[in-house]
Image (tube, rainbow, N blue to C red):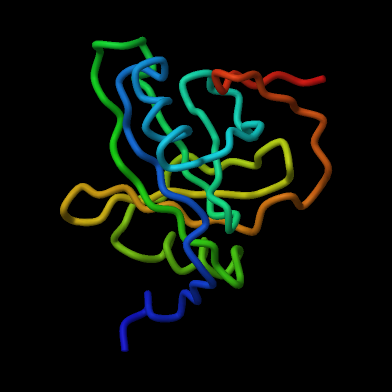
Length: 144
């Protein structure tokens, strides 16, 4: 059994899907697929948080420099049972841990890239603390 097998994944927390322009993409995700826009817990205006009817989150991610620029990578976020233990395991592996963060709702996250260049995110659960963030119809979030 490898050292990484010690990471206990509870569920997929969210997926991050690259989109070029929210005004072109919203119809598919909101109207046809029925995703609901929710407040973002990160301060990045190019990331639109949404969720399915069962609460699974889908983050639609535009290029940081605006439509037509380099597209972000697809990623999947795994919610883990013991976040601190997961960080220790990954920091002692061959994978580089990047972008450690704590979000507005208290959720903690880290990232690695697998050997094929896929981005994997590991998180705690969401909504650890109350957030007063609100969202408009285009997915732009601000504090209330």
